[in-house]
Image (tube, rainbow, N blue to C red; front, side, top):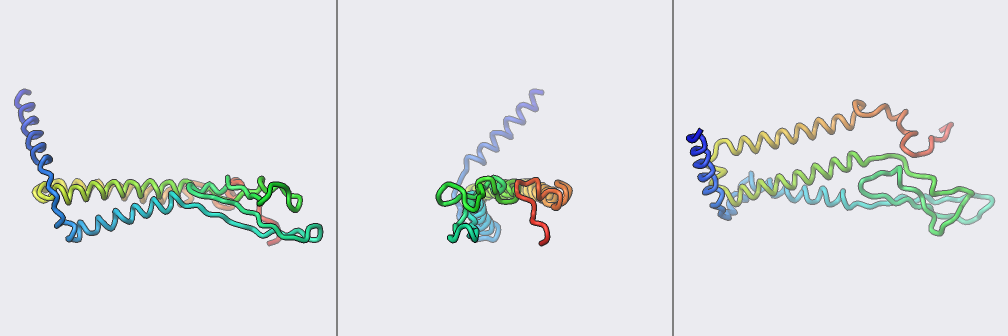
Length: 196
């Protein structure tokens, strides 16, 4: 037991000496391995920034002849996480138009699950690329001397990709939800008009 503790302390001491040898070496960024990680890091920033900060709106020009001669614009605004069934229509000035309470009408769909998965995955990719770049730039010697470290990194990344793909297949197929015909009425929208 004492020899195992001694060996563990030696191993930790050697690891500490290697980890304390942080040296900035930008040469790996000129190689494909480092350059691609920089591109992935930038793409991950754009991915979660553009989806997470997105805001949009849809407008409908409404006219109700013969009682009212003028047209009005009804607007529904939405944004991340894209719960469209909670985005109600608003008139520029509060009130009724065409004898309709527009706040009770909402957009159809709840896409929050897919949007949140996308942003979460982009954040994980960002964190992974940051750690990989730190390893490539700061601990190049440790990375090149170790035979197991690149395999561990590749295995971990492979596990994340397989898990993400399996979750995407589960969420985007009929394994997760019933058919669209049965689900479209339960998402907060009005049923489609008949005869179209």
